[in-house]
Length: 319
Ligand SMILES: Nc1ncnc2c1ncn2[C@@H]1O[C@H](COP(=O)(O)OP(=O)(O)OP(=O)(O)O)[C@@H](O)[C@H]1O
Ligand SMILES: N[C@@H](CCO)C(=O)O
Image (cartoon, rainbow, N blue to C red; front, side, top):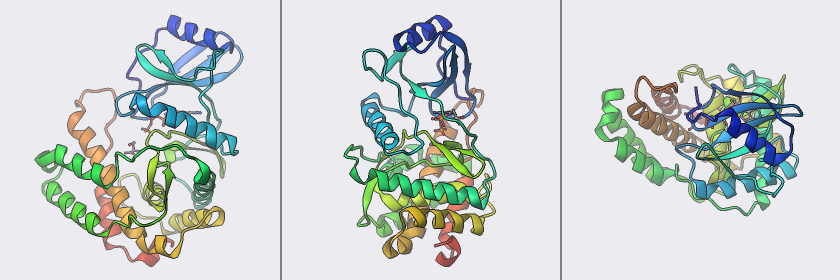
């Protein structure tokens, strides 16, 4: 579950008062997600998401994230805005945490995406990249190449407690990526975490793209690699689904497209994607008490993906 901070009903009521959006009917903690606390809030008029920003979100980055949501929503993407209260303020303090009241979008996150759903997601990702061409917000990617090395350093030899030999494997991979990272490819603000749980779907249509709190400037095609690594395997990192992967890339090509240079670099980008999630999951695995309410995600599910991309023949990746 992910409700790290409890919000008393009185405080919720006082918050809603500032927006003039009806009075509180119910507020339920949302179990999904690991990063922030989220509540589903119903008022006499409307339904909202209340997000309280927790450990990995730096308050100084919130203006960037809120501007990004507004920019994409202005361009017609199904992205929820943070609402402004009667004074025009989007960012609030709730139960001592920075917080926003966010538009509720319909749809469900799929656990076993079909090829048609992967196509729609690739297409939506391409539309998002097109819409970001004139977004001038700046945020460096703390979870890029340098950030992975720093995180590996912080995990240190404890990586071997997750699986013997993991520290050496991570160091090999960091060396490979330092030598082969295609840093010369076009850059843009990217979503950087477009997992199935961050895409809401109604049937085969994308009805919502959420959770932009890792968005940052990065090699743009890395976003496509992250999305493929997240969408085209079983949860445990086995069973790469070539049809789903090809559909995702075809959807992206239909709305934006990968260049020849981006296709050539795709396996290295995908290895970087896998290393990013392997390391953040490993850090959480090592630093989340076993009795914590939040469910830790398996780092080895991304080691298996990493092994897959290391050994993959590029033609099998749907490129
Ligand atoms: N704008 C929204 N409209 C509808 N549902 C939403 C919205 N925002 C969040 N949700 C719901 O809340 C859940 C958790 O949200 P979110 O993924 O943003 O949390 P998180 O803790 O940041 O997650 P993650 O672990 O993916 O980083 C989502 O899976 C979704 O069900
Ligand atoms: N989507 C990430 C969580 C956010 O860093 C994961 O599944 O590991």
